[in-house]
Length: 293
Ligand code: KIV
Image (cartoon, rainbow, N blue to C red; front, side):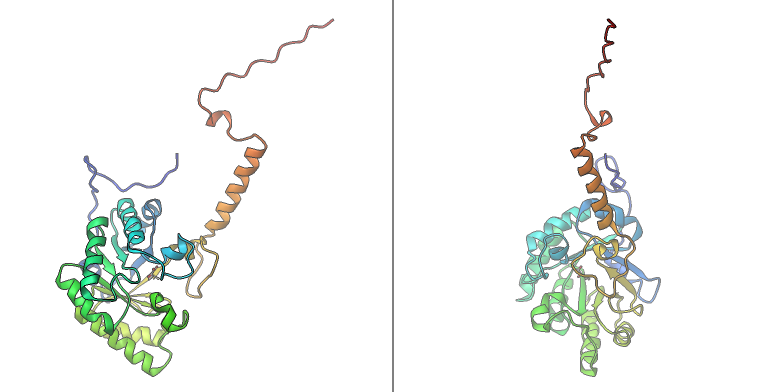
């Protein structure tokens, strides 16, 4: 049996631990750094949950789980399936689920319908959506109807086709001004926190100073109120691309490869399964003594 950590449960199945809420996260502005990491499955959520404040079911699952090149092909059903798994596998962290491309941009009503499905079907605490000024009225619409929203500005991967690639943001004065204004608008609209992705340090610092809610950086320096990272990037489980902003804390992909090579060698040499892995194995028959002539 594997040893996947399970959240503590009451009789009847409800988790014992009190989860952090979006309000708890919002209250951490300017305080102890907020720790956030992506999770896409129940077992992984179980491993990550005791160590972090926020679990983000990011649409990066398009690349990390489904082998897509970008997040543009991720569907609402995918996000809901993985959101449910992460909520089931965790007990303490605040779980936020990304709204995928196409589910919220057309209108606040579309956004509400998508977010309401995500909230009611997964049991998560809130949703994240990408975009600054253009999304402020949608954020206000959702928050005023009971849906906690995390914003996401800077490098917004769902807009990769108009950004012309994954380009670091905030390098010009104009870009910097727009980003600071975006952050203020999202905070005023009621976002409980804002992810700032792929943004140069001075601008991340400006945004963090200007926004009344916590900023959570990814590739946006240590100036933010917290950090988020894609779990596979720091665990060595995704080799197609290694972003500059990620640090490798483990090489689990290499460990998987070594372990499976050993398994394959054991099967081929008939060393696996051994007696200890076998049900009802017949006792070994002692070899008969051959009579001497
Ligand atoms: O999808 C994701 O993993 C994200 C993080 C990069 C913030 O949105």
